[in-house]
Image 1 (tube, rainbow, N blue to C red):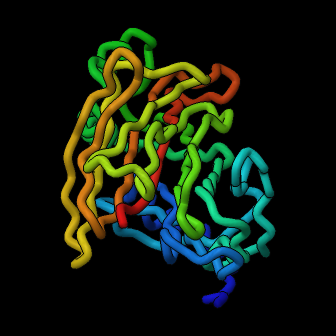
Image 2: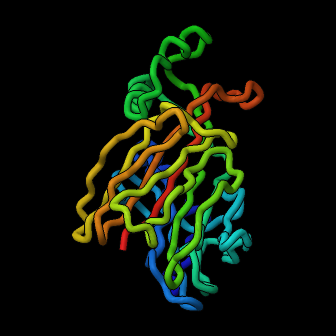
Length: 265
């Protein structure tokens, strides 16, 4: 099942090529519904509009890479440079949660316009005045970014519940898209363990013909949104928090990206 191993130098070239264009990072299982004790495969992906490149696994870029089933946590066993990053054998029936937390990485903005498009897209409000008040330059400044991705996979009947994993920001599914009969899913967005209210959530809805529809919602006072679901569709939810970077980092800003992927049978 292994599709290949990428060298570190090739990986760095790929990432640098996509850095100014790519936004979202997510976990994409080959199949969202699998048989108990059957093969399980998932890619780490980086791109835009639910399309992108498959990234290899490298330990230096990873803080956590785990599978959670009914509260039991199992580190993902993989090899350096693997594509797909996860190849394993599924266990007993239930809802399987795959999570990946990236190590901090840094990018540099050579012009203000690129950063302005980013903050407008993610609806961060009046960052420009805060940037100016802090005496920061309008070009040549750095941003630290970290990714916190989860995927929900149904093993057998897929019954079970999602729960907080302790990542600094994450989505938690309050309903199960594989077993709940409603035509929607409710999720809660957390930041440092608490519900994050009034945050933008970008919803990517991919139909069976690979057509992608993008909509936007805002979390309520409980950090929750309800997303309509269609049978046979796959979903990516994305939300980004932006904060001042630690002074010792010598960066201007730090972004934290939460992502959740799942499918509707």
